Image (cartoon, rainbow, N blue to C red; front, side):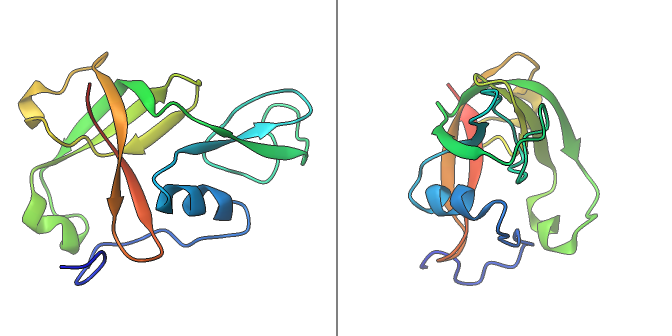
Amino acid sequence: MSAGEGYAKPLPTVTHEDREFWAAAREHRFVLPQCRACGNVWFPPYASCPSCLSFNRGWTEASGRGTVWGFTIMRQPYIGSFEPELPYNVVLVELEEGPMVYSNLIGIDNADIACGLAVEAVFEDATAEITLIKFRPV
């Protein structure tokens, strides 16, 4: 099956604020917005820096490493297309660069997920246009 063939789950809508983020993800690179005025790194990629409000933004390569800060196990089919995966996890990962990112943790039993677990980014080619960033234990 090719990337995205039969992909039925919701996907993000690419905007002018995050176009570079999704383009890098397609190349299996993890980038974060960084303020050229104050140096702040943040996520999600808003057009202006949440620290100083400058629109002078660039992009920095992220390490893709972080730790699980929090998580939940989804047991109800709140979104129907996720029902076949129940139960599945949603994790909040604190990246080495500081920002926090919601995603899924793969390659681990849900019962083994714990706060403080070291993780690294992996890439799921959902469609030809969208590559999702997920995490796996290090």
